[in-house]
Image (cartoon, rainbow, N blue to C red; front, top):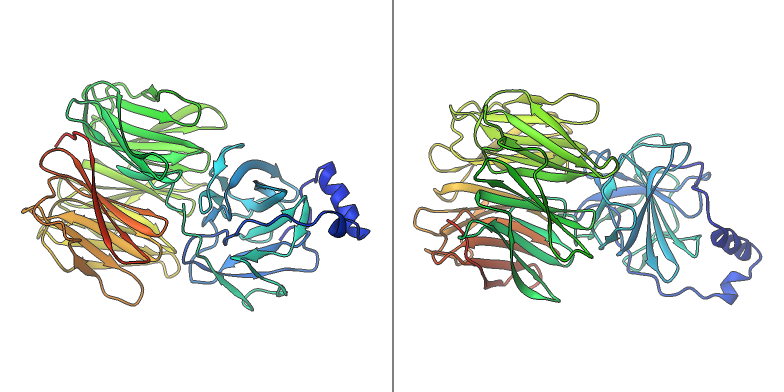
Length: 506
């Protein structure tokens, strides 16, 4: 809901005048619009309305699937160039995407930005978080489609949403905007642009960066960085790839690479001698975050803010832990999980307005691996190998304020699992002692199930998964040090296997 619109430019003002006099429609026929998708995540159902004082042809969207609207990612409904704006008295924090040929989309009242001004964005890429900034009366997405500055009736997937309802819960829209929502999720495998990327410590000790895109095929690159140890991780943010790894000198290595750069940048974020675990992290609004275990066994945090150009951070209180932490974003919240020396779960969390806090989600023993997890609608989830070798699962439901979980049946496994969301599905990968791949999966309407994707006796490293448009992927190291890759195509259901090469450390 917005009663004061952002100031339009001269071209938009003239266009509006021409429409009012009946001139524009005859003199300037509209160029074909992009195929706009819903501005919220794949599989979500939202309800929408238009009120009499609304600007132009805008619609307001709120969640109608039991999830919480505030903090839900806002996605680009088509590819284009994003521009950040702020109007405290009206639109609040908002993003305008220029799609070319005169077409633009507006996204108002954001609680946080996820892109830099001038960044190229793909359809489905996260551009911000739903909020209540500006002249707003509750968290929602105020969404507009404009042609040469003039508001148009909103069309999603070629279908008009008119006539607009005057209140919520009269009409609903389920999103199939599934292209790039996973981009901010960090891990050894992550999406960037039209491709998939995998980062690891190479057998020579430097950073091995392997990637694939439709334009380039598989590309292998050595990003060097000195002698490294453990596992690297990366994520995409503001049009760049960001990768983190631990050096053998217990100092963080941070690489970044984007358009116009011939070689990756490299720095250490003021962490000399501070890093004694694999790093984990995520993109959060206009910030890049990383977490690790420090020499005292506590969770240490660094982040870089695009707006200030500064690295900040400190130690999050709550207790000592062992192994490697795992971090992800849920709504506008930051969550990090680890395990104690006695096998308990430790969970740190923060959101705007509070200091970092900790709890154990009621799991005080039995955690035998590094945890993994994700955000899923109105829930956040954690998985781990339990003391019997099974897949332990715990989740918190925002709406009810209650915990759930149990053990997912199917296989005894070793090492550390990796979990991710694909569309409305939950996927977890692990490996058996004999080198078989283990794949657990669940979606609404079924019990957890397990298969092996045909990978038997070949997996020598912990697998990691990735969601991409119309596909879900898994990567793992073979005995010869190369990277094997498998994916399932949603349309055909077929499993495709290839090898990206490389020489990866065990």
